[in-house]
Image (cartoon, rainbow, N blue to C red; front, top):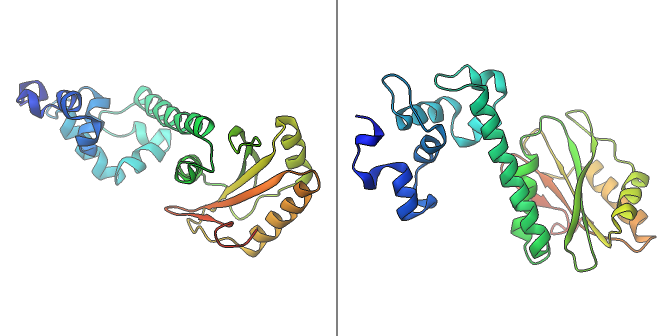
Length: 224
């Protein structure tokens, strides 16, 4: 039986329209994206197979193009669409930050940074530049390093802060190991950056360390 032959209230698209997207399972949401199945498989059947193969939604979103396209019922077009959906989600979170302000939405800040950085295979150092009301002006990935470290230069951070006319900053970087625990080097460079920025009256509000499932705030740990 195809999805079109199901009772209307059980079809993923109709269920979304009547009950909202949150009422759908991962497989139902993915089936809506896939739109059609293949011979012998409905879109929902195919979605369940893909979720099992990749270990869930995250695995599908973070897989490389070659492996993605090798799976039954998928191809480069679907890969591009999914990557676009993921980028739209991240831009939506950034716009929400810019609209609401980071200090009044700490959870949103962490959600955005985690969504953006946790899947990176190399260490990346990101900076959120904020105005005097602690609203996000811009975000930039300033440095990239090996899988173990990233070279961070205070002069470049200062230059970009001046360019954006920032009054405050929030730093973030990922640990490809998946462990969101600040290292001694992380603490040292954070304090060095904070000292340099204080000389020109720019506040360092936090440094977030992004792991696989957790985000650690150095400000909350008293490490700034």
